[in-house]
Amino acid sequence: MSRPDENKNEHPVVHPIPPVYRADSRILILGSFPSVKSRETGFFYGHPQNRFWKVTAAVCGEEVPQTVEEKKAFLLRNHIAVWDVIASCVITGSSDASIRDVVPNPLQDILECADIRQIYCNGATAWKYYRKYQEKQLGREAVRLPSTSPANAAWSVERLLGEWSQCGEVLRNGE
Image (cartoon, rainbow, N blue to C red; front, side, top):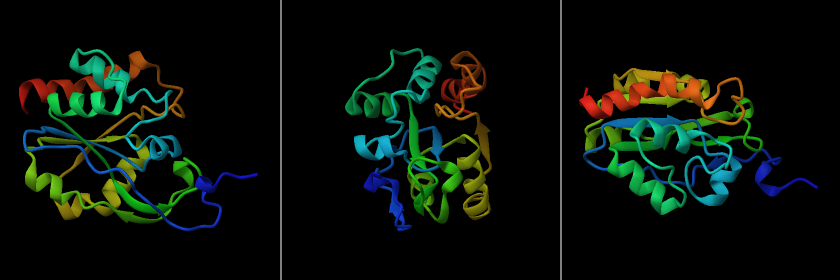
């Protein structure tokens, strides 16, 4: 029996998680669309095997946050804004490859309110949809980072850190 959140009925799924940011956020990290597990937990990168929290904590020299409240506090304390490129789409389970009928999120709100110096896309899908729907409108290029998803098993945490360390440089240098 299939789970209802697998979206076999071909209805759009609406992004249920609000963005995390404030005026002093310096970088914006964009995912594509929340996984089933993230939608269940009500927060970004909720799959226990996603390396996002491990990688960003290492970049910032902190312990890995565990609870949703710790994760929010971690992001804000470190001047990191997080959201996803897609506001709604038809998706099967958590498969980025199945995404279609995309409606993009209004990223302009974050960029008008926060001191975002660099936009990063967590993986190829986020980058693809950012470039397709938002790059020209916003007039801001994004840096594509390798995905922290467990589906990107070819990248070890150490290898991810090598690429993601540029986020820490922008946070420290304010560039």
